[in-house]
Image (cartoon, rainbow, N blue to C red):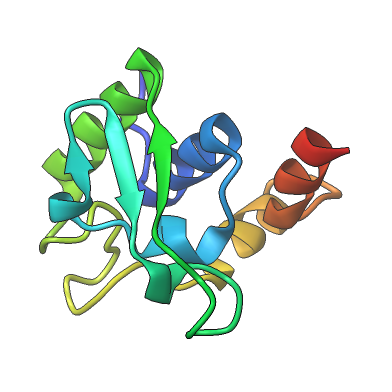
Length: 114
């Protein structure tokens, strides 16, 4: 089986967790403790003074994705394609378009909340 790319792993984690793409693209190794991902308030959508950090429980499959991403990442972000920062927010939507999916990453979040 072919090794998944950083973008494929990010998309899988997005689907499993139901978070927005911005916090997912900026997931950093120090945000994970055991099976909990703590998203800093500054990475959450909302007014800066009214937003708090957000905790996301991680399934065993989500933890496996992070383990694979860590092996491919070139810095302290789990998802980094270039090694100079985090994965660009547009990478997942470009990938979905490339493989012919008529959807966008935000659609997964929306389908979990509807």
